[in-house]
Figure 1 (cartoon, rainbow, N blue to C red):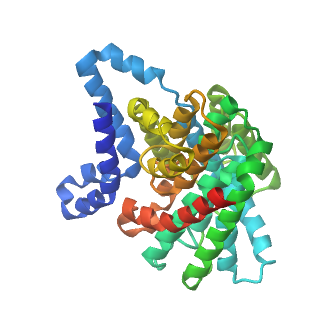
Figure 2 (tube, rainbow, N blue to C red):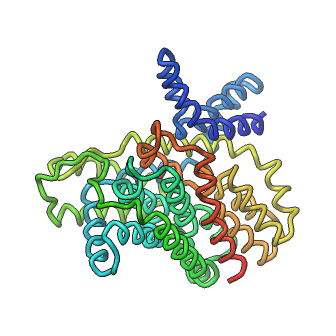
Length: 412
């Protein structure tokens, strides 16, 4: 029953943009259709359907017990780090650094900025975590690459590169990428191991993807617009306020595995932004909550897929495991996939490498493939027709950068 609901949710994900189109054709039911057309709502919605079915079949107590048994640290963390990383002082600090670097590169400013964001920020995700890197990169690219006048095919190509680069860019350390975090403790993989076995290969692929993409779309890039988030620029942000915001971001990242602490820090952050509201722009609370809802739904639905996923993973040779993990990541969260792999007894070192390499390689193929992807969708969808991102368009845009990543991890 859980597998059937999960399959329906996958179909719903790919149909979300079509449902958004229906909302314009049938205004009488536009509210409901807009709700069901929100990609971030899909898995949360079907998670409640599954819990309802469990309550009917096994009783309400069983459904509640299962829901409470799931681990929701990741959805909570992504919500908190999204809101903090997208605050005005943090974004202005990042923009100032980018502008300084753009002046050094022998390229037009919008081209230089797009390349720096697509190449540098995903690798920075190895330090600040992938969800924070996705948030910063998406908001910075919104005014350059994802503008209305940029061709849609260029936007999907850029979205695919962004998602793939963020997925592999967090592999320079052992704590920043969710699929790596799931196995790092069980397999004793520290940051030195990740850098020597994965990180430098990921950096090569990230640089190639960013360079090829920017060369492809450079004719469409114009001077950046102001970021889409409304903000009052009449009052400059003091350096002390910026330092406090960066301190909150660092503290939330450091406490990423301790929800009681990082959510407490987040509450303090909300109080600080209220106290110094004249230096703030509206926080992206809605977008963060939607992404958290999506990931929490994925946790509930994914928790009952082990019965078919684990035998499939354990029965593959290392090379087949690499290909299979890349493909399976498109239909299930890559962190869930590597977690199941960590439970396999006697798995070889080569199979461990292939499993994780395949999981991070396929992390840009769909919205559900990697935990930070829903954050990118929430922040960038307004740049696409009807405010909806097509799952098919994302898949096509991610194919080429995924192939580059696969070649880097397999042959280097």
